View 1: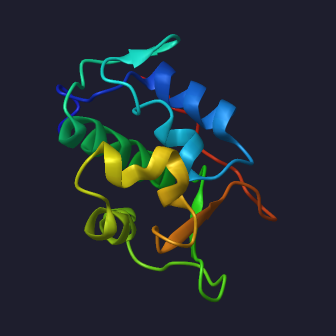
View 2 (view 1 turned 30 degrees about the vertical axis):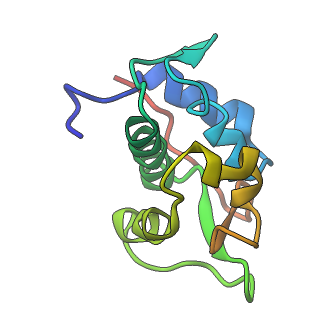
View 3 (view 1 turned 60 degrees about the vertical axis):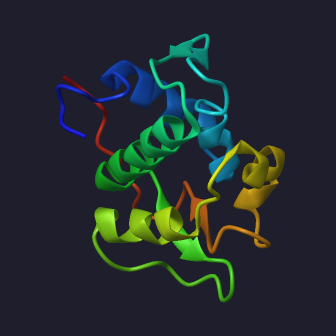
Length: 130
């Protein structure tokens, strides 16, 4: 996705970063769970694939701006690689439809290979600005 067809505004990204802080990845997915979104985050993503791609796009931006880090559920070590490479780990394991999301339970160790941390020593995220 390019900036021109970004699924969310910079303000939406900042809102998600603020309201999902200290939560697991399912709290970010909550913004994409419903086709078209729900207030205050509205988007034009209707199909599961569109919503999945919007969610993954958002995770990549959160990584790029230093809001989150991903860690392996197996040993709690940090996932390495570029933000795109890290998000690709989730993309490869992601369910194929809403049913596979198991109402958000997929994000826990049974389904998703990684978790998220929002706080660490020296954390200094870059705000989302136009």
